[in-house]
Image (cartoon, rainbow, N blue to C red; front, side):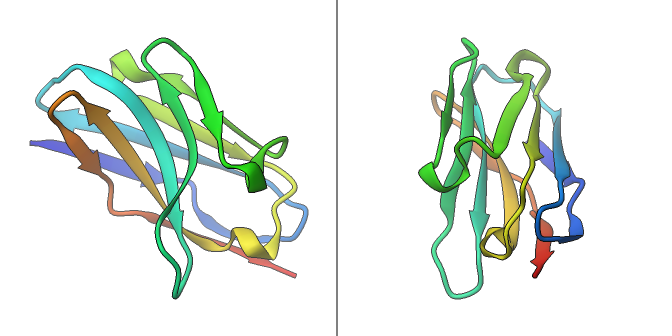
Length: 115
């Protein structure tokens, strides 16, 4: 089994910044990509940002220019630097690690942005 543990969430005022971290432990597997998703109350889980094993990144339109994903998929670590946070960014943020046959999720970390 693989365990993903997120950290770095919290309460921040609009315009502030937070940095989320995710680290994996357990058995090894070939990671194709790692990503951050989020789920706001009453809404579906959505992709925020993704980084592939080749270092390619992909962002959801609402966070482009404000969030930056980084990490080392070979070391099962991924980060999300979130700047210029808005109240609409309030959600539980989940870390995901995907392989060819595997798909693992963390427990999530709450991010709350006050206006």
